[in-house]
Image 1 (tube, rainbow over the protein chains, first blue to last red):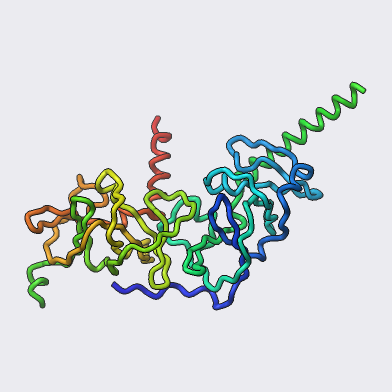
Image 2: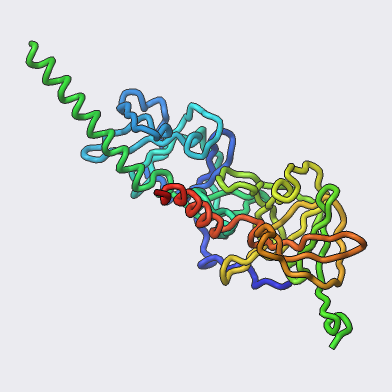
Length: 177
Length: 159
């Protein structure tokens, strides 16, 4: 049986991507989605611990003025073996900073193929699609796919609670002095 | 009109999974190919092993052996590439099979209500009664997600 030729990419234009690893697994992200790359070593001083029930992939939050960036452990998000993570991708137009093992390389993607419809669970939020590079298939992540609106609401509530506890502790110390 | 059409015969591809044979309507089969490298990446859909690259297409590999035989088969000789319907859309899926496939003409008996959803019908061939597979029910797709959600909601609906 003949099928229509696979849908052509929206245009023949290419896209710059960053290939990165999480727990040894290769992923790609559009370089335009990455606002900043930071070393995870810089995290202890800059990040605050946070604990939201049922959301183990986020343990820290970065404060940027009035913005909060939630640090998502990539390995936990994808259900891979836990890894420490050496780099942080601050993802543009999201509230996510993604903890990854490292950058493999930057390259150009000429074609993004939609995720086959057989894939019908959370991965449809995780990936924009798949791309074939050097005879390898790499999933291209969706920057907004790391935290759902429900998860963000949960994290905001946990953040508020953390702030309130900190304020209460400060007031207590202040009054005792 | 051909003799096969006059007799009400249809074409089926017989595939082998372990010791058992199953049939799929021949007009759903694209090709039979030798196993190639499977690319795996994280996902949550059961029964999907990963994807293969075939003629520039990325084709999901769907292992149906556990559902059909109750156990996973590790040995595989070919991938049977079939067409799977998703509403109005059609996509290729690759099913690992353990032996040669055979094209036959046979008359299909329709499935009855008590048959499993993945059974499209039955045919008799070579002294065997063989299940004709309904790939849309056998392999994952958005409709499975709806069915799972409905199944999850059902117990809550009870008084």
